[in-house]
Image 1 (cartoon, one colour):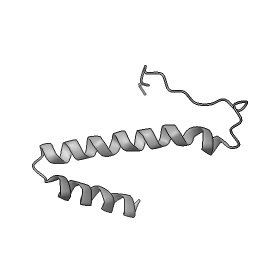
Image 2: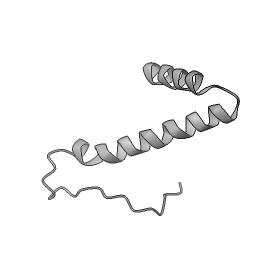
Image 3: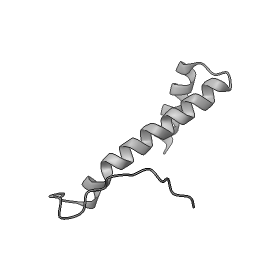
Image 4: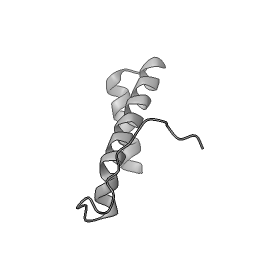
Length: 64
């Protein structure tokens, strides 16, 4: 697996973070946004409208 060379700041346990979930949540949200943008771009480049693409992405999220 190839990891990105970009720097991601994950707070260490001593950083007043109460749980691992709280430490990882900002990274998870950023990745979620990046994935949704890539899906949207791919769907639009395949000829879907933005509305159709967003509807399909939201349906995928509901089924997840």
